[in-house]
Amino acid sequence: MIDRELIRVFREIGRDIFVAGLTSSHGGNMSVRDGDRIVITRRGSMLGRLGDDDLVETDMTPCGADERCSREIVVHRAIYEATDAQAIVHAHPLHTIARSFASDTIVPADSEGLYVLGEVPVVSSASTIASAEAGAVLAEALRTAPVAVLRTHGPFAKGGSLEEAFMHMSVLEASAVVLDLLGR
Image (cartoon, rainbow, N blue to C red):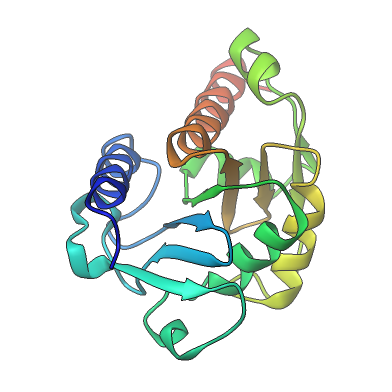
């Protein structure tokens, strides 16, 4: 059984992601790691309206629960295996995704973006949704960065908590907007 406090945090962060315009109605996913267990949003859930049944507890290795998990479970597992992440947020922020088409790195021009994120890697994968290849390139990039962008698909942000991962996502999109406003 998933802890009520953790459900509350998933709901709040999911709502914040949606209200901030960082993803579409049914896009994105989030997870938290607790030892060899992962709590992840279910396949097809709406981050802005998460209910108790929208969270799935699963293992670090593939298992029967995976059928209900977000398709991106393979990517989340790869990131957890390779990094110190305790939480992951994946969304589809428009300005960040648009930048990923033409850049290998997003370098914030604003002070907050530079301080919180530094240079943000943009990585490529032949299969961008729920693939082992995407998991591998993102995990490698996230060894040293708090957030990395999968070209044409969107960023995956890590943190010690969902709140911290959300902050990285939010700062990245704000920095992408600033770059757009500057015409860079």
